[in-house]
Length: 327
Image (cartoon, rainbow, N blue to C red; front, side):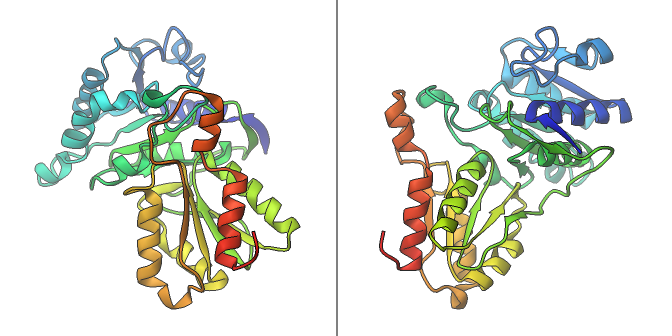
């Protein structure tokens, strides 16, 4: 095991898969000469050259479409969006081409490609650069959506995503690229569609993903000091969603709080709440509660950003509500 940064774990995954399979290539803005906007692809141009690490113009629709065409012709592109906020320019190619091509061609064309980059808030970047897109893309059949929270999971899941024969939306976070964590030595993959219980507990289940896992785990620590034992589940994959792991935990704890940075309407937390009430209603001792981002465009001012986002205090209050204890 080695302690490395999140960006280094992603780079290892990319480099290992490009060495393993010459069909894999990386394309996006600033990925080559500049070594990546967040230095994920640092040094890769020197090793693989400009035919496999390709700088693009500021034209997400264009290079996303090139990626789809390359995948249809047997290559395995990794398309980097500098931020998924910019993927809105390319969403027609992602939704109407990548996600649907296998079905529309009656199985003649697989689209083995990865769209990756940061999603969600990243400080005081205001309304147009702070949106959470997991639920947007998870809504579309034909796409797989992955959203890891730590370096080890990021590496194993990115390798699995590159090898997958379906298009994968791989969501990162600008605020996690410098995070350090232990990453196994040698070759390993983490299966897409398998959540992970990061902390065992008995009184309440907390479910989250991506950088909100850090807030969730911190809340679990705070709750432990007050005698409340929280089980913490990291979704890791949004679609397909590992409902079984969540249900099994709720059957043990009888309470559920979902922490989700996105807007509350039609969110990932909405889907989880529906599935739990459908499949585990008789095990619930309290209504499912959600801790979401506020239902407004992201503000710019730091105090408003902090008020907007889920926090340890908000999670603790929600847990005490489902526990029916004084706040």
